[in-house]
Length: 76
Ligand SMILES: [Zn+2]
Image (tube, rainbow, N blue to C red; front, side, top):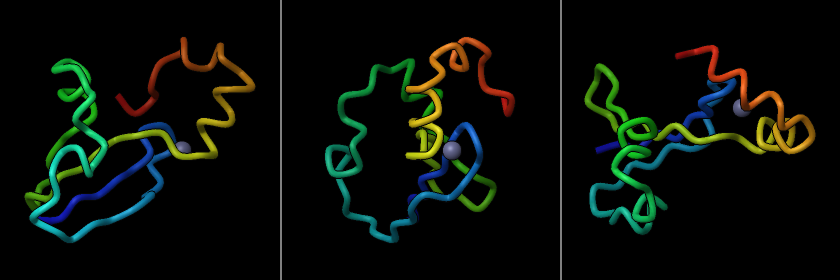
């Protein structure tokens, strides 16, 4: 199974892992609420797990312009 981390703001691919034996803790997913998991963890058409996080660039932009986060995700 493949895990792909993409930025949910700009869509940039951040990382890709090809390991089947990773626990959710290793993936950084164990602290998510069920609601967050629903939004963050998705599957693509090929069966890969896509984890939608925020890249450093967008995180930085949100830190400097917190009002941007109120606009919502244009990709949704
Ligand atoms: Zn981004």
